[in-house]
Length: 333
Figure 1 (spheres, rainbow, N blue to C red):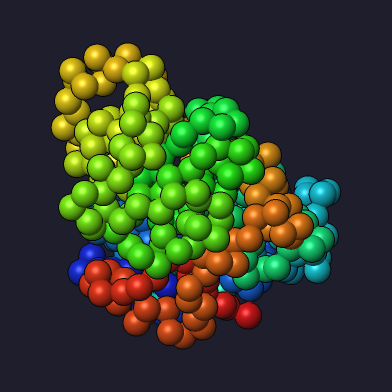
Figure 2 (cartoon, rainbow, N blue to C red):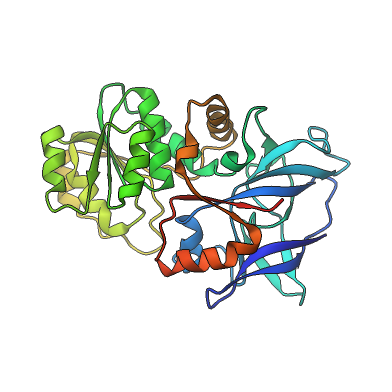
């Protein structure tokens, strides 16, 4: 199957190229992509080789929505014309024959995937908007972290980093009735954090930001979600915890060693939680259902909607660091 895909080479140059996808197998479905969601965290960690899931060239993207066009003869729970959301693409190669690392390859006009796997596809909730639903992974990651940490109603919780995953954490905490403090250097992200239910908004760009937190919770937070993914922020997050608090390593901190100060964590007798991935089908369905019912107002996070033809320039701008993107979706059809 011929398709168009967003490709990143080993010089971190982006282009929209024709690619060849494998034929739909008996246990697979073929999907025409409508929207793919952008992750400026994990995707650009892969693009910059902070983490690696395969050699260049890459096709990134790990979330999308679309319409089923082909169904393998062994697949019984999907039919042509259904609206779906998906987590991966099965493989692709360039017109030259060179293999592309699909990591996970959803920034593509078409997807071929086994739907009945942990990172396959599922049916969209009837009321879900396809553009918003294409950004389902980050709120599912946040919901998974909140579920594992299990903060209680009325507890003080700090979300350190209000990117898309941090915003997903904030939305899940607000529903639980926690008292949520969002911390970030990005003023736009903090505004969105307030729209999703954060009670206190703290700009980490201000010199006295930790004093502002101390005024809200003099003893520290019951739970701190470290959502920046920056190893140098872990020790700061520890300092925000009260004794016997929980610290959630919600970001992806890469393969290198993390400079952790032992005694501050030790003396506080902290519990640490290490959630990974998006919690699976239950979390994904929960956030898409919440979007469709309006209990997760995820539309506040979408700051950019772009056409596939403009994706290379858009990714170049993000990779340069000169951007104001919070959440973004790419429209393919």
